Length: 182
Image (cartoon, rainbow, N blue to C red):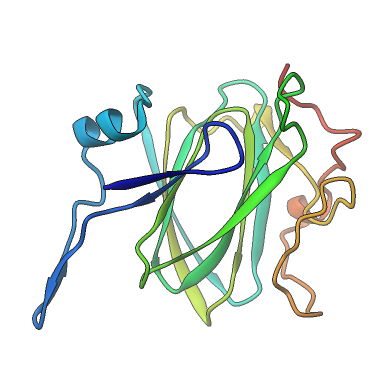
């Protein structure tokens, strides 16, 4: 696998080694030993999640203030614009974000460590999005950063369209009011 460092410390873009021919392709989507050796991440994954969404659905920016989750994310069908936001107050990159296109075609994955918020926007007609987490979902600790906070300034590729949001995501807080990591 090819591991690409990003501008956010600890956030990694991962390109798996794909073997393809006229019959199709094969790749290891996850191998614990290879992942640890290539990334240096020693956390164990405890939960897998699968999300199906239509075009312009925006999910996030989600995080848990306790039982913080690291996430290894990928699109298995369709295409998404995937975003990580540094929510660690002591970090030099606090409040900064970075986004990547993840798709079934490019097979890229993103490692989003604990301490970061995560969200994505569906760019294709629909998308199936898988993510492995390093801790269990804890709704009492879940928080949501508002998707369009001008203080963070995420450049979502919406081309003037309004995203489809859940009620919870529509009520996210701006970074200035959000409970973050110390």
